[in-house]
Length: 396
Image 1: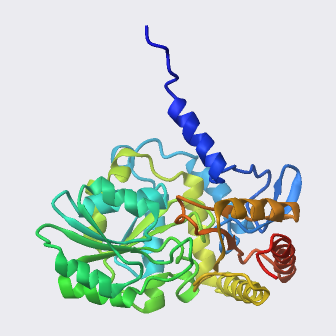
Image 2 (image 1 turned 90 degrees about the horizontal axis):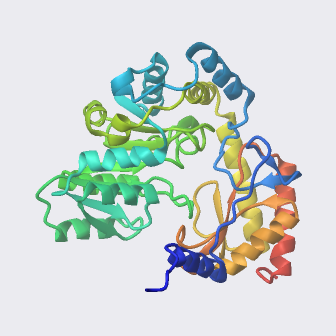
Image 3 (image 1 turned 180 degrees about the vertical axis):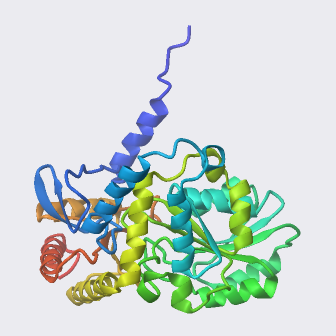
């Protein structure tokens, strides 16, 4: 009789390998609201990890809106919207999002990830072709794979290479060009005007994932399309309410005909329940705040410029970021993990990011300072980075 082998032996081996390479992810538990400072293991630490760009995740107006929505609508939607009906709260949010983005229509999903999983397969089938930026987010990559279409990766932020790849590729069925708007690990911005020109030349749909652009770029945080003045030209904008809006949920905004089609064929819309009532109420309040004032967006950019300039002056490599995302490039994953642990000892929560989130040998600490941080907060963070950087020989 053959010796029994553990069915999970291969998983155990892979996990051991991750630990040896310094790529095993340990997730810290937060015991407080998400804000500029958080409590971990009973200790208050400066939070440089969250995508809470505008500090809205714990904003009193957002909290009150969520409570009010529960009082009026309860909590859960009961089932998928096509079966159980849709709450007026959801249609209000979609109308307001369309107005905010300056588009014909919008449709909401459970997350930005599911928004991409819904949209890409619905627009491009197995006979189609997708031209995707080589550094696109995992949700875009997974959406492309689910479509069954042929996937052609073009070089990062390179419209010339995109044009070349299109010229080399026979396109008989549907076609799509898809890019992140702001690339979350490097903080650089897609050359959307040039990509639009390529799309128009070839009659191909253009889609941008604006997850890290909403609340950051454009007038009062209206996003990358507004930033470049391309209203009515970009076919599909995908976004999330889990970052700058401080809540959770996804959105697809653009042409009415595309939104109508997603209500018929977007699988996460058809087969998964909608956002909960308090989430929707909170998102509506976030739109109110952004429409009333640019204060949070202005503070975000002020903080980002100060922090980035000071880090560069100390000798840190902050990559090619054009946004409030500040990647502190360290190279080796073990060094990045050691740097993160040392920062935590100094009272700063800033996680190491390594492969597969970023390429091999491109490990980093990604700093997300936000509108919730004060000047004093940033200076404390900078002092911690300088101390750890000198101790580990990253800077002189």
